[in-house]
Length: 355
Image 1 (cartoon, one colour):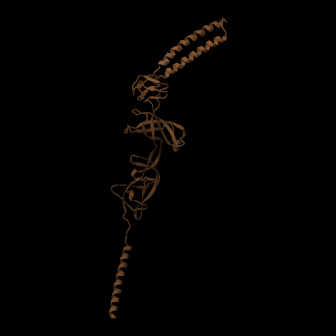
Image 2 (cartoon, helix red, strand yellow; image 1 turned 90 degrees about the vertical axis):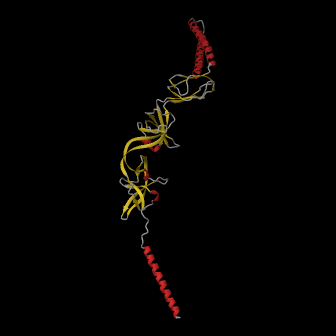
Image 3 (cartoon, one colour; image 1 turned 120 degrees about the horizontal axis):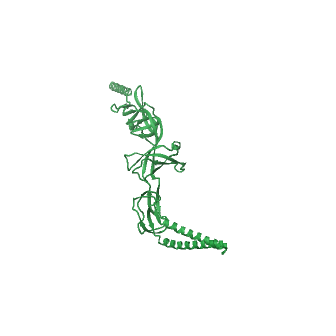
């Protein structure tokens, strides 16, 4: 019996010691600091400075005078007086369409006109002598006028068969060859006056009050990536497209040497006014469908932490983004390491990055 009591006492002592040890360990663990270490980031300071307001857009270059010459009548191509790509003058003959039938018809009508004129002149003399009735003179006059009209009609047909340049410019590539049969409306060749180019583009209707004639436009093209061409806003459409809610704009290209109609152009429209805007590095902005975020660095007694801000961006240029709202001048923003951040996350700034 005494042996059992001794064993029980030993077990109680052993269990008690174990419990005391476990309690001490848990107390030590509970009082320990298990906060996540600060996240290393790079940072920069938002700066406010004057900003000249601009609008980005895309447009198409066109010739102020550019047309597609088409056949106005039917027949075989009997002559092509110029080559594809030639520069032509006003009124220069370009293409001839078979006119043999019209030439023969004109000769017949000329003879008829001559006879009708002689008969009218004779009747005009006889009416003064009261030798013929007035109705005969009226008939002679009508025959003369009919002959004149028929001759004018065949002259118009002949003119349509002789395609000439309506203005000076450069020809494109001919779509027909000598001997081809063409019908009215058949495309022949393009003619572009490259001395005066225009720029057509559109902007959202919210910019309508800002679109005033005389604004300067800088444009770039893929063909000349290192050149900036100048244009001047000339006209604004009188209505907004109800399908796209865009406003059509036309500008004249002031310096367009080398540009061709149909080229695609990227545009920067100078609104001719300056405002103060806050600028941050482009890497400080995280873009998403829900809104653009910037992590702003704040400080309390325990150190630095970050606060996400939804910002409204205006434009990006030269590695910087103009901010309309969300960040103030002098605030520090995170420029690298955003993928590891969350609201109120503790941070430390990489000393090599600077602020």
